[in-house]
Length: 397
Image (cartoon, rainbow, N blue to C red):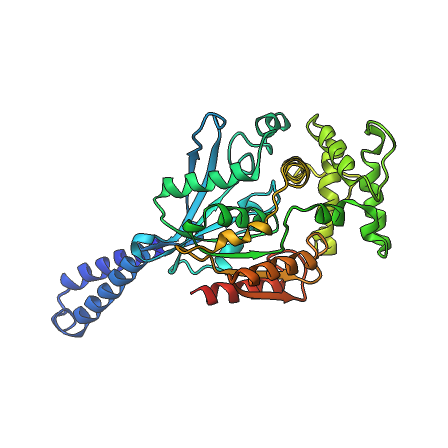
């Protein structure tokens, strides 16, 4: 936009100079100068208006170091675009999923939800992911920096970013793992939230763990059973102790995967990623082959496999989150975090029954604004989910 406005102004200046030196005085003295003046006014107004916001392709990227004794050397990549709060823009924190994915994986989908003239969008690659440093995508040996990662630590990262950017409050927007981390952040820092929009709900519970990592969950689906068996056999031979039971040993299975992943086992990393990716993927042409590693996709696989194992094990078994119990923290005398929920009824990786349990708790606390259960899958790009998310943003406004 800025390029075209500058080009228009240069063109106007060139034409004006030609007219001013022309010997054809009627052209110079009558209607043409008025037309030129009108065009200059339009261009100036448009230039002023465009300078108040940045489209997503004009976004600002920066690295923000995270302070604290346990965070030495850790910096988070942050991208901002839209209308600055000083010009009336509403700040939005985008919380990506995975864990282990990054902002780039979403292919600029947020421009479909947020008008750059109304919102100021803050997109963050969570610690260790994407362009944040040190990144697990770059080298599996960087996993050692994040063996003690926790969701409370990640929520605290967002607080440091908010303070660094000088933002008082923001709307929190996330899906899948982003719904987990977004809800955790809102419960811990409710006074900093304008609202909460979440989709593809994951509450980090033992039941959800089994819904994906226990074979019995796919009992009536031959295709999924075959995929699960390939996933299970990927590390079964490495297990310590008694043989794994695919129906009851989901925790031991994922701990075995984690042990192989932190050793840089490419096959374990790839099979872990492929299993979940294919549960989510809606386009048959985009399904991954568990027996053929894609060099282009492998860095994502390395990041997702590590962070999912580590954070899911910690949040489910080592330090249970209990996000449902803490929903009461969204409401206080000082602030109420109005919450919107979007859930695809065909979501296999985050089944709808867990979203319903969240909706019930939000209703009990009086903080549910709206809930949409739509005929769709997991991704934000699924037609039904995408449409419902747009409705949530409109309702927030």
